[in-house]
Length: 317
Length: 290
Image (cartoon, rainbow over all chains, first blue to last red; front, side, top):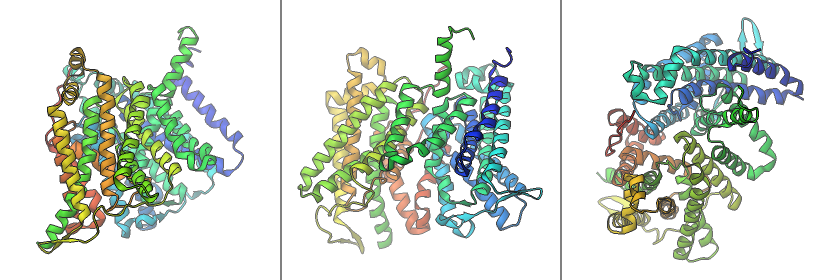
C-alpha cells in the first residue's frame, strides 16, 4: 500500500488505469483522434520537462525537432523507400546528432539568451523546411503513408490510441526512473545551484547536454509517428507556435513534474476543442486562461493541486 | 553600387523599426528582468488603431496620438494585471504569461478589428527620391527620422531627467534604488507605458510601408527580441545597433543570397554572435552566485 502512494508506482498505475478506461467515454473516431494528439504531446512534454523542469534550461525550438522527425519519416519512406522504423530511427539519430552538436555552445548560454538561441535554431529549421520545396514540398506540405509494422498497418485512430498509450506509459516509466537515478539527482543539483554542484564534482553541462539530446530525439520520434498517423505534414509543425505550445504544456502542468506534463499536454490539447464554439473569441479566451493559470498557479497545475491536497489532508504524506 | 544602396535603404528602414522594438524589450527588461513577448503586439495595436481612426476621418496626428494613448493603456494594464501579480514567479513562468498576453491581444485585435490587412497613406506623398541611382521612399525617411528622434528623446530622458535616472538606478540595483526612496512599482509601470509607446510609434510609421493585420506583431516582436539580445539585453544602445544589424543583414541577404532565407539570416547571425559572445555584443557579463 505504501508503495502505491509513491509517484513512481502509484502514479504510473493510475495513469495506466486512466488510459485504459478513457476510451469507454469516446463516442466516435474523432475522440480517438484528439486523444492520440494528446498522447503524442504528452510524450514530447515529458521529455521536454526533463530539460526544462529538471535541467533548468528553456527551449523555444523543440517544435523544430518534432518536425525534423516527421519530415525524416515522410522523405525516408516515400522517397527512399525505407521501412518506416528505419526512417524513424534515422530521423531520431540525425536529430540526436544535431542536438548534440548544438548543445554545447547553446547550453552555455543562460536564461533569455538561451531562449533566443533555441528560438533561432527552431526558426532556421522552420524556414529551411518551408523553402527547400524539392525535398519537403514547401509550404503546401507533403503526404505520408500509414505506418506499417511487420506487415500490420495501423490505419484506425483506435489502433493509434493503444500504440500511443503504451508508448506514453513506457516514456513516463523511463522518465521517472531517470529522474530518480544519479543522472536526475545531478540535474537537480545543477538546477538548484550550478556552481555549488560543480564545486562538489558534478559535471552539470554534461547532464544538460544529455537531457537536450534525449528530449530532442524523443520529440523527433514522436514527430515520425505523428507524420504516419496524420498522413500529411506542413512546415507549420516546426513553427514558433508549436514550440511555444510545447513549453506552455510543460509549464502549465508543472515544471519538474512528469505527471504534470502529461496533464498539461492533455489539457492544452483538449482546450481548443472546448473553445471551438467561441469562434472569434477563441484566441482571447485561450490567452486569458494561459495568463490566469500562470499568475495564480505559478508552480503549475499538478504541483499546486498536490500541495492543496496535502494541506487539506493534514500533511500526513 | 545603386543596388547596394537600395538594399541599405531597405535595411535601415526595417532596422529602425527593429531598433524601436528592441528598445522596448530593453526598457522593460531593465526595469523588471522580464522579457515581454507581447512587445510585437504593441506595434500591431499602434498601427491598427491609427489605420482605423484615419479611415474614419480623424486627422493623422490626432489618430496617432490616440493610438499611442491606447497602446500605453494596454501596456500599463498588462503590467498591473499580469506582471505585477506574478513578480516572484520563475523566468519561464513569466515568459509564458507574456506569451499568453500576446495571444490574448492578437485575439482581442481580431475581435475589435478583423482579420483583414489595414494600411495608412504615406505621411508625405509617394514620389520616390532618387539618390545615386537608388530610389528612396519618403516614408522610409519618416521611419528613420522618427526612430532617431525617439532614440534621442530616450537618451535625454534616461540621462538628464530625475525620473529617467531613477529608472536606470532601478535597473542597476533594485533594492538599493528602493532604499534610496525610488518608487520601484512606479518605475515598472512607466517602463511598460514607455515600451508600449515605442511599439506604437514604430507601428504607426511602418504601416504605410508594410501593411498591418492582427498577426503583424509576431515577426516584428521576434526581430525586436533578436535585436535586444544581439546588442546585449538591457543595453539601450546595444538594442539600437542590434536592430540596425538585423535589418541591414536581412536586406543584404534578401538581395544577394535568397529572399526566401531573409528571415533565417538574422537568426544565423544571432546564433553566431551568441556562440562567441554569450552576452551579446555589448552585454555585461553576468556574475554567478552560489
